[in-house]
Image (cartoon, rainbow, N blue to C red; front, side):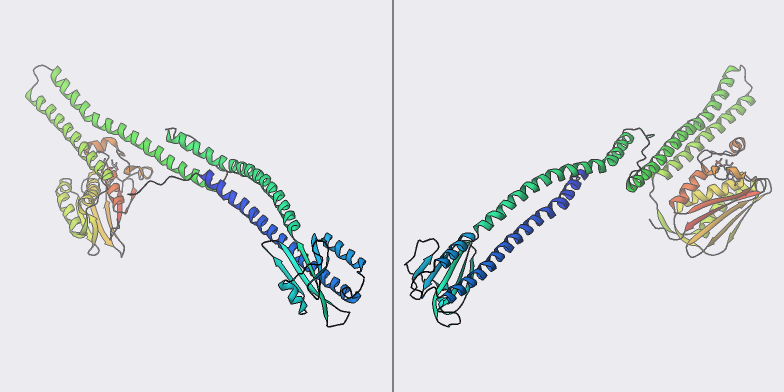
Length: 473
Ligand code: ADP
């Protein structure tokens, strides 16, 4: 089962996008900068302590601190001050692992054996950082005298990095406050940007709503962005076509009513005058009845043509098959020859080649029939009608030329409109409804073809139909 997907709001999408662009870098930056700042501080502290420790152990070695009978209080002081500065503790252990100086004065006389102390008794200077408990431990050997290889003790320095952590924590707190402020400002900026960005789109939407509610004349121009301009232009184009279609529908309905009413009015006039006369001679009676019958024929022809046209426009269904066009044209001409013969009009067919094409036989026959019928209808006595059939690799062409009355140039485009007739009186005389060419054009278009006319008033007309040999639905 397919579930209808809810459309995403453009505003929400934009807000989320802008927020991601604005907030993410801010958080990432804060996270990375603070992290590396903290690490940097710790590393610097470690190096500094290591150096101090080495300098101090050298001093203690040079002064023979551990072998002197009297304690060097100056060095003791120096160690205490240093321990204070680095918020740490400095301890000196002698050969017997006994603590001889402690800057905290807590463990003097006690034994101190740790892994680092043992390593330094082997001559190594150790520097280690305990990440869990956040402190540095540095140990360095103290030699009996400057240049001596005999180790008489070890200097142990322990220093906490809590202060550094507290410091970065304070910076982090400040950064969070800054981030919060930035977030508020960013939120306000995003809202403002979305408001400004969406304003033309909202305007356009409002106008579309107006159009949808029936106000087809609403000016929907929205030229702020190129995209909205393009959209409004295509909607305008669609609306223009809609208005045209609406106008043409109204005109069609008016024309249909008028055309259908005309024969009925004539019938009524004929019938009324018959009824108003007394002792009507049978002769006159017959004549009037004949006229009435003609009008009924005309009404029926209009209805038939209208039905064909509506069918053509409504059911786009095409019954396509491969048809021999030469045979089809021949058959149509054969049917129309007797009508032409009544006015001594000669019909000739000129087939340039054998043509087979994919067409709807019934619809195409109707279209061609209309063209040849017109060529006969609008012809003069003893005239001619020439039908020419030709083809190339893509299309086939049917040309219907006549020696008739011709069509004034200014009407050549109009004759394909429904109910359009150049000479209404003549058309009426010949039983024309003004729908024949509209039907023909519709059929040609359904076959993805084209129709054009060339005519000279008083000399004759040529209608050319071009149809693709292969029908692509
Ligand atoms: P109608 O039923 O009046 O013939 P059509 O739609 O077939 O209607 O033709 C429209 C008008 O075009 C005709 O009324 C006529 O004035 C003109 N017309 C069509 N074919 C020809 C032609 N072969 N020669 C001159 N005029 C023509």
